[in-house]
Length: 286
Ligand SMILES: C[S@@+](CC[C@H](N)C(=O)[O-])C[C@H]1O[C@@H](n2cnc3c(N)ncnc32)[C@H](O)[C@@H]1O
Image: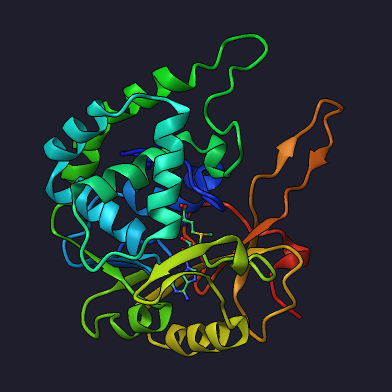
């Protein structure tokens, strides 16, 4: 069970796999995440003694995480002023997707948070977050109000954490020389970068990732003896030219007892010390 669950659902979140990933994270002094999203993996880990450096290209996302870290009381009180209603969701959509601010305050962070919570499972849709399930068990509004109670623990966990709105290249360049760093890399999968719209200085644009460059920079970084990298990928990603250890994530048993494979894989630049063996036939990229 994660130490601190993430603040909101997020597209491409690894929350279904957090435990599987966290158990493979080796001892470290510093932790770096260039594609932090809702931060499920770093929040699930105990705080390391050195630097925790979390970044994402989406300036609104990072502003919201910084507001949770630095101003949780103001954020919660602003969120309590909003009705949990479609009008607030529409206003949040307009502000977040159609305006580019010169500076960001509590209101924008609150609208970003509201949007993420109300968008059903993190995906946008006309009825997102306001639809009751047929059996009435899910109550989105109650989940939303309960989520506000979790903001203080998240704020506490994010103290002394560096949060940066920037491209992944700048984040990898910030990996410290000294100590032992774990880098957790969860990029948009190939063909899905445009699922993420990111707020930059020029407005909200579709993200774009050059995976070939990313993989070659990670391969180079992994040659440092004091850096261990964990990389999540779609099973169909063309093979990397490397010798990393490969695990299937989310292997579950279906009702007939056979293994139902999910489409995500985890590559590690090191051999995790968990007693879990990687699947032998997939141990190396060819
Ligand atoms: C798969 S999601 C990360 C999900 C996250 N690990 C979680 O569990 O919530 C990928 C993230 O990459 C970010 N992103 C897209 N393009 C980027 C870029 N060029 N540099 C840094 N981050 C980028 C997106 O904003 C998105 O938050």
